[in-house]
View 1: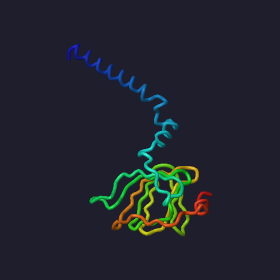
View 2: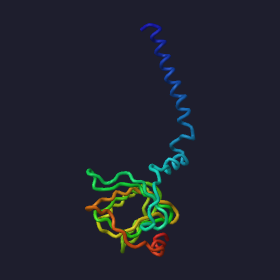
View 3: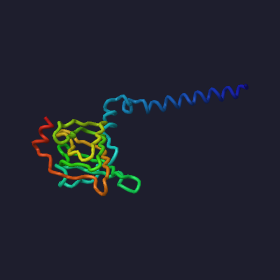
View 4: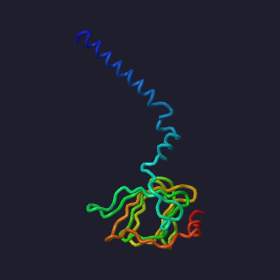
Length: 175
């Protein structure tokens, strides 16, 4: 090996080391440190999907929004969407003739089947709702709830709406 090759080799190693150190000075600052609790909270609170359009008040108490992700088509016998409930918002009692799956992506709230105790739900929870089970779901009184809803169709129907969840019923689960 001649001296120029050795010199080039050391220059390459030095340059790579310098680039690594200078690049790390931007990536490894406290502001961008993935272990920084504030940065982690900010990343966890960023919405994956837009809030969507306000849902009709005839099926929801207070404000809830839908961002459709996938409509039923020849390949899929389900609809997929993101529902955002403002604090205190909830569905009316309802059933799904072919079931529904909820995947909570942010916030906290409740899921309740008729005649059973309500379950507190939070980010990461998955609810597999059987067909024709009367239920409601929505945000807690103090936090919004965001979930992905996968709603199956039976024929042309995917939901049967019923009466509103009363304030008394809702307040009982928020205590």
